[in-house]
Amino acid sequence: MNESGTIIGMVRSGGVYYHITGATAEEVFTDAVSRISLPAGVSPDALLTGLMERERLMSTSIGYGVALPHPRVPLVSGTENERIYVCYLDRGVNFDAMDGMPVHVLFLILSSGSESHLGILSGLSYLLQQQPFRDALRSKPDTDELTAIMENHLQGENKQ
Image 1 (tube, rainbow, N blue to C red):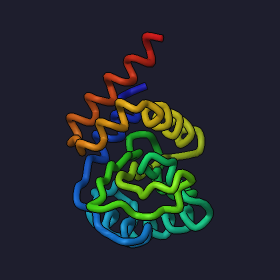
Image 2: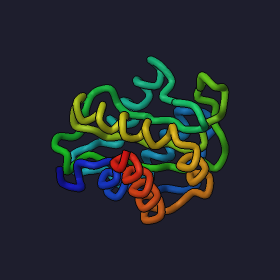
Image 3: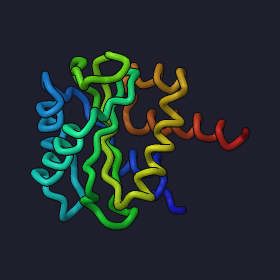
């Protein structure tokens, strides 16, 4: 698998964004979508609509102050167009998380299909279950720092 097909490659392609504002999920999504660099052919309006439709079905918060928003229908084709955008919110926002914690970090996911999407969710879930990784997110690392942290944690998984 080339790096574009890994969650680390997807974070590098998507990037890290700071100071995302909003008091609701919709406001946060609107601000995030207005700032991120989308692959060719992806409409910001289609992405925002997809994110809101998915969020209305069920919260994308997974707890620990983290949400994994994504459209239900793929907006990209091919792994080279997949992205994970890491968005640090200026303040916590209520996403109706099961643990009641406000969301401070989004891992906004653009995937090309259900198989790829499940792999992305699995990789992110593995990382986010680790307290040291969640602690590292609190320092709001930039793209290079975050991908190095991710590599370190994923290498630990491969040694087991």
